[in-house]
Length: 144
Image 1 (cartoon, rainbow, N blue to C red):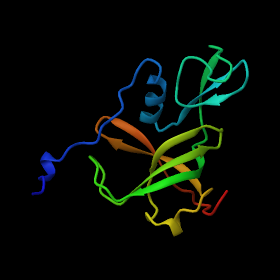
Image 2 (cartoon, helix red, strand yellow; image 1 turned 180 degrees about the horizontal axis):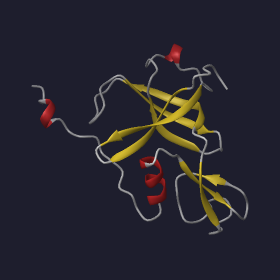
Image 3 (cartoon, rainbow, N blue to C red; image 1 turned 180 degrees about the vertical axis):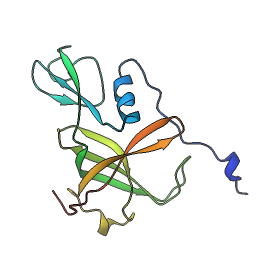
Image 4 (cartoon, rainbow, N blue to C red; image 1 turned 60 degrees about the vertical axis):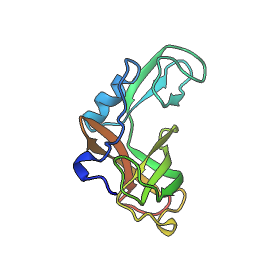
């Protein structure tokens, strides 16, 4: 028995916290915001009020370039709320250094189309009231 589309489970959405609110305000504005430690220079993700490298709380929020490379991925053939298989779940390495778990869009869910180090750029997908960062191959194409 299939579930009618109106009764299909919806995708789980993140719940912003005081520590992550700047990130979600950024995605709503079409920006990928990261944090940088002013004491040691480490750029990190996920958001938190202190540096995971040196534990300093002297940190700043800045707008990242939105460029990344493909680090790892899995092509899921399993249905999940809010996703129609097949879809690509990926770990990308941002140009600024941190890695981010995300989805790839605009590319075939085929290993031949997904070489590691593939150059990617961020875009924002609106789901409910949230703007979620997803990545697609850059116009330059190829590996970085």
